[in-house]
Amino acid sequence: AACCEQHLAIAIAKSRLGGIHGMSRDAQASGDRAAGGTNRLVRGVPTRLGALLAPAIVSAALLIAALPAPAASQSGPKLKVPPGFAIDVFADKVGSVRFMAFDPAGTLLISEPSSGRVLALPDKNADGKADAVKVVVTGLDQPHGLAFRDGALVIAETSRVQRFAYDPGAMKATRPTLLARLPSGGGHWTRTVVFGADGAMYVSVGSSCNVCRESDQRRAAILRYNGDGSGERLFSTGL
Image (cartoon, rainbow, N blue to C red; front, side, top):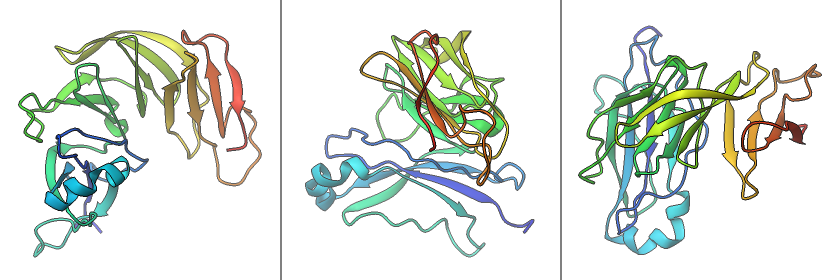
């Protein structure tokens, strides 16, 4: 309905020491801009009981949920967290957040595919709330996965993987270098990049469809590259 918008809530549970643990799973509120919605990053804060339980559950404490906007009489989305935890807003006025990673200085970076950019959410006073929303880089092709390698920021876009020189002080990514070109198009457009203990770069490429025979064997697969993007080969297929 035209009166509805989508909200993206990200719950980050923190241990008694205040550290953030866990990583996000895949979720996207694709209609937020069309509906004029505003999304928020939400962190989970442990109470006394939560601090006692943190060692057992903190590794699974990061929750991403795409929820419809509440009715006008409600104050906000109703999120449920484990006993001993509470929800608080970490950052608002962000778009369709898709992936998160921490830079070498500990600043949280997020990808925003619908706007083709990566943002930084610094929390310099460590109060559990983002001080600002900083634009790290723009003009990307549906950026999704984020990874750091030797101080450089590597971004997996739907059609390519690029490496950027990254300045953690300025929170800016510049001087892009193309590492790999990827097959694009179709329904499953996200690409995730990680670096293994072997120093190789691994990139996931979703299928172009739900039920079909792929014409490109790199679809529905994980690709392996050398750290510099050379030596492409299939690592896993039929995914």
